[in-house]
Image (cartoon, rainbow, N blue to C red; front, side, top):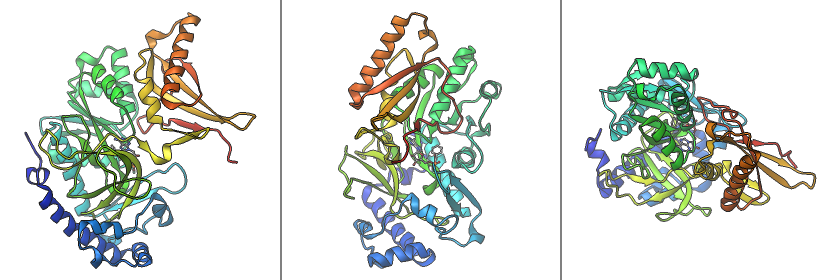
Length: 433
Ligand code: DLL
């Protein structure tokens, strides 16, 4: 087994908890001293950094949310003076001001190390040629991943987004063995490679895919079409960016690195869930300097898994993300996550993994949900009866899982826009009441 940092990755719980406590105390002290927002929140709760005597005391600290970023836009949450901030990134929210994050030199260094740890875990090393097909702007997936590729010693190909045939040409010409992009873009690359008969020319072995929700079935499609192994990569700007949790070769849950983050998975009442249960991922940065997030409510829903993993690493483990609390749509009172729809359609052979949810309200002011799905190229037919059968099957399968009436529209292959960024799944046309 090759580790990037065997000492940390296999550290026993007791030692890890001691390290975490020291780091938590330091983070709490720094934000209390340097960030007026945190000082106010601590004071409101009557808690001082010195009150953190054990890890369980973290529950005394205030929780934070994305709204605290927008309220303190742009630099209000920074814990280091601007002269020590050497880079900013931001994450575009769906509305309002973006969340701005600042990094010190040390932050950039730790972040690259974390990514190198993840890449090593899935077998990437200095012999790899690694294409990064995401946007290199303020999005953390560009420069963040790039630094990680260089740190592990692989050859970075900073491809950015767009022009999918050109991306494939680069992959062939440069002998690319590993790629980082969103899962939906990986699927588009795979479709294009298959369509143009390019798969055999690729040397690709590994895909590190993340930044949006995807399913195990989607993974299977990508792996089969490109003949690679694809790993789930989770991250968020508020905690660095990519690299926060990553799958190991077991492909059964993600490792989340306890030396840098204190992990809580909380239920609706703010209590830590037990193993196997689902809850909201709440993270505290333990080693950051530029922007230290305390008990940050990620909005991401996951399950806590048992920490023992056959790969030998001893970190906390979480399941693939189930969805975002704020992606959840309520249709006639029933909660629906886009990932549930993805899961259903990815099991139906006649349709692709691409879909869009259109929400409207009818003249009785009731919600209507239409799911647009694409037919596979070879499923396209003039035979209306056959199309009707496919459509009815999709409706029945969705109904089975979602328990809500759904209209299904079959679209021609390629009708739903593919992007190099995160895909837009929900179009909500219900007017505000
Ligand atoms: O998406 C960081 C990233 C870049 C992760 C590249 C992985 C690869 P943000 O733009 O701030 O950061 O968006 C963070 O994206 O809270 C999740 O809701 C979602 N997300 C990220 N990774 C996954 C994943 C980057 N693997 C938000 N599965 C997070 C599901 C994900 N959702």
